[in-house]
Image (cartoon, rainbow, N blue to C red; front, side):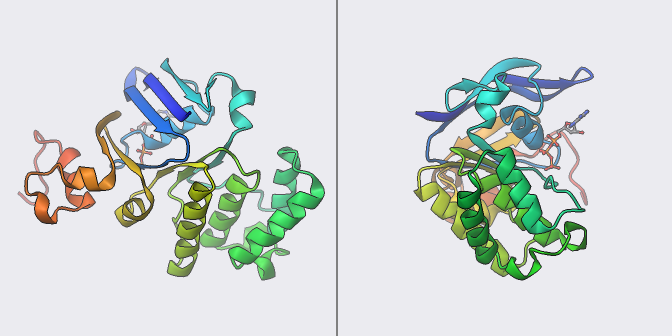
Length: 250
Ligand SMILES: Nc1ncnc2c1ncn2[C@@H]1O[C@H](COP(=O)(O)OP(=O)(O)OP(=O)(O)O)[C@@H](O)[C@H]1O
């Protein structure tokens, strides 16, 4: 089954095309790395796929359900946006308990999962502190736990390692690897190419609202002419260069 599909998916803001007739097929259980320069339309695409923004035209499905059916789609997805949605006045644990109730997770199951995640992310000691006192990395960890707590079929992550120290970033990569091994689909946007190289089965490079390159990481690095030592960074730079624009420094 395909976890995510998009056909001619388009978003315009005030007449400006931000996502341009995007086609996407992500089979279940895939880790999809979504790359692209600032402003390429990654977040807008994720917001359409997670039902937060309506497409201007075209269509998309998550686990077979159209993104226009908000309730059906929301039950099968988790989403970590750039700014994790948390309440400053709650403690970390209260925030997760609140979220578990929103997601109808039975209390006993929720408490077990919350304890497990707090341990895994080294947050147990801070779980009784208010989120307003959290660092960026701690907020990010709470956001990640929220995205995964209800064990969704498809998880969307915008820069999942943002603000994390190397140890926490490593934990996140291991967690995502495990989540994918368990058969969940992971759709992640990041600027850190090593994250994609390590995790992704499939990589799509978005440029000016269109997918300009797609394939598995090894296949992509093999597409460059000077393929021998090419990296995903070479591919990224090659396919996201506006050849008509002057290069800084020239
Ligand atoms: N609500 C909005 N109204 C108008 N323009 C918007 C809106 N949201 C996004 N845009 C524009 O759409 C374009 C794509 O933005 P988007 O946030 O999707 O890019 P991105 O690839 O996620 O970038 P980054 O890597 O910097 O996070 C940008 O030019 C942005 O200014």
